[in-house]
Amino acid sequence: MIEPDTQSGQRALAKVPEVTLLFWVIKIAATTLGETGGDAVSMSMNLGYLVGTLIFAVLFVVAVSAQIRAKQFHPALYWLAIVASTMVGTTMADLADRSLGIGYAGGSSILLLLLLASLAIWYRTTGTIAVSSINSPKAEMFYWVTIMFSQTLGTALGDWTADTAGLGYSGGALLFSGLLALIVLLKYASSISWTLLFWAAFVLTRPLGAVVGDFLDKPHDHGGLAMSRYTASAALLTFMIMCIALFRQRASRHAH
Image (tube, rainbow, N blue to C red; front, top):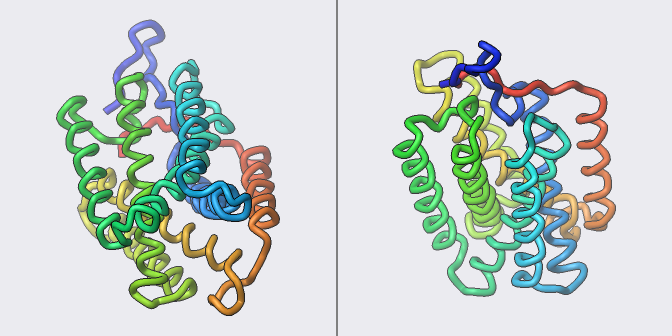
């Protein structure tokens, strides 16, 4: 729910973008950038998953702190925080799945529990997990913690699907694209809460970005296009900047 603004008589705006087709296009590009950018730091620069996680964790905390301190919605600042969350999610999932030996299934299970716990505590504390309710520092903190868990879970799911489940990058992309299409169908053909569908879609865009990112930069003998991680990241970042600069995004106004 949106709280009324007692000073202006207008409903307070959430400091997150309105959920439109443009939102999902940029979100998928951001999650793909998170995969290629995270791998560029941890693998191409040979810094490793732990150092990569620490670097992106600092970037994430700085970006989210700036987002929370902001007085109104700023698209560039919001998407910077999203990209930071995808990058720390990439390296954190890789650290848990590979370096710590938990495995994709184990890592995905733990992260799913953390995500559900975050949503449950958020709902119990504020009474709603709707996107348009994010107009207070407390709600924003819950929002970004939930996003971090969802991005990390999405990375683990993408890797598990492409590698362990044997679907490969193209198979994984088709699977997650199909699930997202199902969510769109449910939005218009069912009475399921849009808030629940939103968070399901938010989680699923991350593994889609993960498998697409891996498809772009993995070697040919691994089913990828063998693009440089730096080149792929630069192209995705340029695309995002163009979308943000050319298309106006409004702050979310309505409960979902």
